[in-house]
Length: 140
Image 1 (cartoon, rainbow, N blue to C red):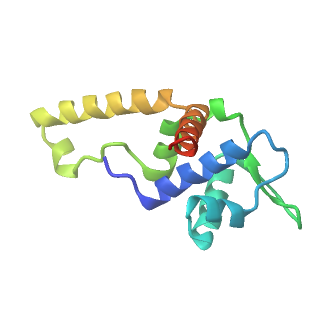
Image 2 (image 1 turned 30 degrees about the vertical axis):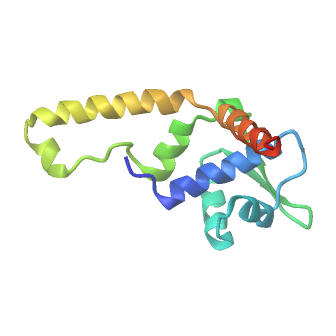
């Protein structure tokens, strides 16, 4: 499994929007970029794609920015990864053309990965992120 920079950045942008979720004010791209370390020019392209997917909404103007279009528990990590990065386990064309014993195994592995990633929502990821922040904040 290879996770592209585009897929990683999309997940990080969605995480930042999910962390911001209780706040109704849109989050500015510069804030998402700064907090998640995503290059601003690349972030804008990713947010446009996420908007086309129906995962984020934008607001224009001085107080504009982005918000999640759905609740964070309605967005799965698997959904985002498939849309942004393609198949979980890209298999060489040669493997699919012949009846290779490994083809069935690769398909089983991809199905197992999909089941795991589809169970993880951005609400789950927010909880994990907040758990990490609190653990860091209280270290002595």
